[in-house]
Image: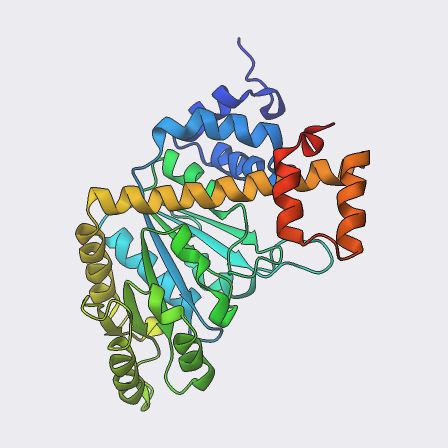
Length: 323
């Protein structure tokens, strides 16, 4: 009788094959691998790459307290009613002790844990100012390769800095709630600009209509004010307005033609490339203190050289490539 190899002995191609087959344990292991980064992550993503590009990537963002997790839980149920598979990447604050994700409101999705058509993973933001951990794009690629039809990325509740989601998602939904002055201020600060769909949650609140009117006025100030952005009211706890939200997401995705999706994918790849390249340079600089590098640092410290000029000089040299 053949003995199944230990997970630790699987190579990138073996693990990738299991991910593509939808094996949940393998998907979880693959996510842990790409979160960790390094050579194993690169090899795995390379093995998975040809199987990506099929999933619909939906970003859910907004200020704290608007009910994003409850909304995502209700949206999962709606998509599953249509027999669509769903993955959720829930980006949470990092624990100051372990560095791992603080699960927060993820308990609102526990009713879906036993559903084989749903895969939920919490990631730690690890201090990412834009509401997304650096591993989010890579994790989305794993879930895409695993055949999940919809990947929902729920950002950490960081308010007005939550615009990095557009670098990951095909369609971005911005959620706000009635009577939250800070939420409206966040919209003015730029969050409104990234919305493909706008949602006022907790719409059973008497102030919901006022908030809708405020947002309608603000939409006219967008740089692309001629583009129609759906503005919906939901009460996620009671699943009110959720079918309409699912329809709006479907329509927004359909309007995003192949060229638009390709452009957004290129933007995601550009962001990943810049992140990875920056990480490589930072690690090499930390490990390398050659004479030319020391000269640059000394001139910067003396005010003789600005940081941008020094960076260009550094990249043109081979200093940062030294081991």
